[in-house]
Length: 209
Ligand code: C5P
Image (cartoon, rainbow, N blue to C red):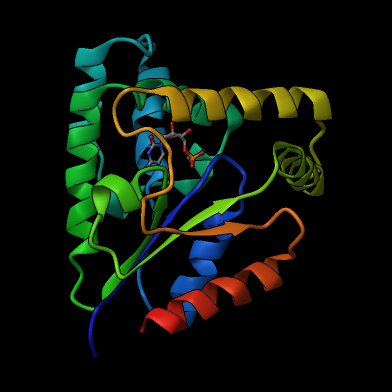
């Protein structure tokens, strides 16, 4: 079997994580949500009471990130994602995390990675690159339903503002900004169900095989 590497990028709440998991299941590949590595660093800083712009501690925390023990549940909080996007601007920290992500991608059978810079920086030679988007309103709506389905409460306008703000930070940073790779397939899921998005992505991957 020839290895298959699938790179998936896109903004916050675009549905790229769900899509990445579905594709990984379908093609029997390991999956890495690279956002968790940035979240793990942010979480370590918060837990120790270190400021998010404390570069020395952030870099030290990045060295300690262990892909095998990322605790998805502990890292899922909204504040952790917000903090992650702040520490993600530190070039040395990115270098350390990207190295770990590339090691994961070197799996002999291939892998599915999702994040912001997978097709552009982490796996520029990926077999298939997807750039998953949806309008900010649709993403805010999905996030709201997600929170409510878990019994939480949130305000649509606040979520929308957060999403727009996070987009700006992730697209505007100097090092590895969020943008589609030149050879990425764009997938706008604004009007698609999860199933429809999966089928569209599968068609793109099958076409590349
Ligand atoms: O995808 P998730 O919301 O978990 O990512 C949290 C933050 O981590 C993003 O807003 C982004 O700033 C950063 N990130 C990144 N590069 C990646 C994945 C995530 O800079 N490959």
